[in-house]
Image 1 (cartoon, rainbow over the protein chains, first blue to last red):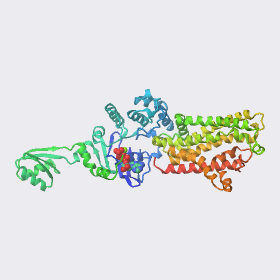
Image 2 (image 1 turned 90 degrees about the horizontal axis):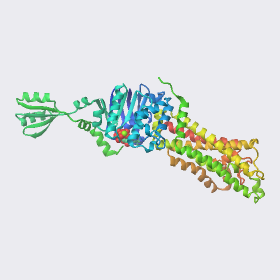
Image 3 (image 1 turned 45 degrees about the vertical axis):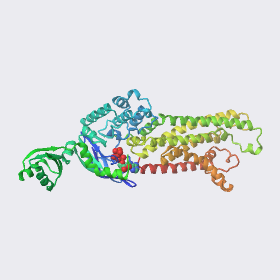
Image 4 (image 1 turned 45 degrees about the horizontal axis):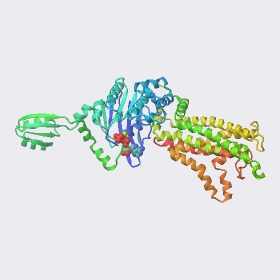
Length: 304
Length: 266
Ligand SMILES: Nc1ncnc2c1ncn2[C@@H]1O[C@H](COP(=O)(O)OP(=O)(O)OP(=O)(O)O)[C@@H](O)[C@H]1O
Ligand SMILES: [Mg+2]
C-alpha cells in the first residue's frame, strides 16, 4: 500500500508535482501514466525519500519511508537501471545491498538466477546492456522479497521478449498480493499491463480508474444515419453536440450518448437507421486527458 | 515487523563496496607504495649528501621526517580515496540505490567514514612503520641514525604518520560530501595542499611564518617532528596542537558535508 497525500515538489522555477494525492492498492498492477515531464519520476523519488517534498507526504505501508526499519524488505524499487557503480560486479552490488538490510546473502544468488544474470554475476555492471541493467535493477528490487514494488519506465530498453517477460512478472507479483506501481508515458503499454491507471499531467492528478472506466467516461463518438440527416444534425447541434458530417448518408456525433440521440430523433419524428457508439481509443483518451499539460511542457520546457 | 539491521550492517555493506571497486583498492595500494617508496628515495638522497651538509643544515635534519617523507605524496592518494568513496556514488547516481536501502543519511555517512578511516589507518600505519624501518636501515651508522622505536618521540611520530593520512582521507571525504563530484573535490583538495602554500609564499615573510603553520601538510610534519621546527626553520605548532587543528578542519568540513547531505535531494 502506497499513499501520496497532497504532495507538492517545487524545483526553483518548476512545480514538478502539484498537490498530488492517490493511493496504490495491493493485489493490482497500478499504472502511473503521464506525458514526459509530468512528474512521475519525481513522485517516485519522493515516495522513496530521496527528495524532500515541498508540501504533503508519502507513506508506504502507513509509514514515511525513512521510518522503515529495513526498507528493502518493505519496498523494492527500480528507478534508474544505470544507478549502479559501473566498476562493481553485479553480485557485489547486490551483496552490499543485501547486507545493509540484513538480508541473507543466499538471496543474492536466488534473485540473480531469477532474472537470468547468474552467468554474468561477476562481470562489472558498467559492461551491461540496458536490458541486462534492467534485470539487475529488478534483482535489486526483489532482494528483500518486499510487499510493495515501484518501477519507473521498466520496459525502456527491453526487447519484445523482455517486455513480455516483465509483464508476466508484474502479473505474478500482483497475484501474490503485492502492491505494484509501474510508470509509463505510453497509454498503449499501460492498457495491456495495468489493472488500474492513475493519470497525471503537469504534476497534477487528472483521473484514475480501470482501463475500461477510463475509456467509458471519455468522450466517444456515435455514428448516426437517419431519414433526414440535415434536420437531425441541426437538432443535435442545438442539444448541444458537435456533429461531423461525413456524407449524406450519416454523421459522427460527439457530446451525446446514443440513447439521447435516439430520443431526440424520435421526438422530432425522424427515423434512425443506424446508431453506433464508437469508443475512443485508449491513446485518444490519454491525449485528450493530458492535452493541456503536453502543450505546457513543450512550450515552456523541454524535459526528461 | 523486521527490526533495523543497524549501523554494523551498513558498515559491513560499505566495506563490501570499498573493496569491490578498483579505484579505492588501487588508491590504497598507491598510498602504501608512495609512503614507502618515496621515503626510500628521499632517504637515499639525503644519505648521499650527509657529508657535504653544513652544520646548520645538519642540526635541522630530522631523520624521522626524512623516513616518513613519502607521506607528502601519499596525502594526495588518501584525499582522492576519501572523495571517491562518496563522489563515485553521485556520478553513477548509485547514491539513489544506496539511500533507498539506507535512508538514514547520518548512519550512511558514519558507516562510510568508519570503513574509510579504518582502512586508511591500518594501511597508513603499516606504510609508516615500514618507512621507519627502511629509514633506520639507510641511516644506520651515520650521523643521522634513527633512534629506536622504543624512544617515545619516535614511536609517536611514526604512529601519527598513519593518523595524519587517515585524517586527510576524512578531509577529502568531507569535500566529496559537499561538492558531490569527483573532479571538483579532487582539484579542491589538491589546490588546498599545493596552491595555498604558493599563495602564502607571495605574502610578506612575517605573515608567512604565522600562516604556514596552519597548512595541512605543515601540521602533518609538525605531528612527526622531533625538533619542533621544519627544515629552513619554519616555526610549527606543537604535536598535539597540530593534531587538534587538523581534527578541527575535518570536523568543519565533514560537519558541513553532513548538514548538506541531510538537506539536499539525492
Ligand atoms: N532535480 C531536478 N531539478 C530541477 N527540475 C527537475 C528535477 N527533477 C525533475 N525536474 C523537473 O520536474 C518536472 C517533472 O520531471 P519528472 O522527471 O518527474 O517527469 P517524468 O514524468 O518522470 O517524465 P519522463 O516521462 O520524461 O520520465 C520536469 O519539468 C523536470 O524538468
Ligand atoms: Mg521519468
